[in-house]
Length: 226
Image (tube, rainbow, N blue to C red; front, side):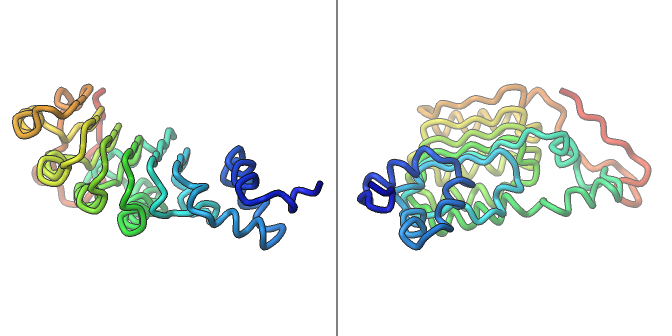
């Protein structure tokens, strides 16, 4: 029996064992496999190990998506975590190649994946409060939001959780240095049942623009304290 003679249910099961690249390569072999590749039932879970994977056309965003994670562990994460006013021209050029990738991708998620229940973002140094607020508004069934080492996340994200995270049960804001203890206290008071974790966040030194800095990154060096 040839693989193309298998029914759709069997093909979906076989595809489920493949990674995103292998699924895409197999889909290129015939229209039948391309049709299976485009079945939303195949894509309830998406995990990305780098930001470049977000640009690949080897996955499908749909209302079937339930769990999403973008976990980037790279030396470039440290560059992303530097505030813009501290970056050198070279550092800004590095970030310029990918600084909008996560936000743009999450905007697509907001439009296409209303049934999302779990999101994990690690090392996404450019993800913004506005983007996360939109995610909370668009994905009303979101139950878990886990953020780690997201330097742009501030108390505004905590306020968005209180305002829009009606279904949220778990929130992690670990190593998010611009989240304050006051913001965490306000969130705990507003959402007492929320399982809130903020490892090292409120104890880290928040970012503040230095006084009298004439041009970003020209004379001041950023020192990250962990």
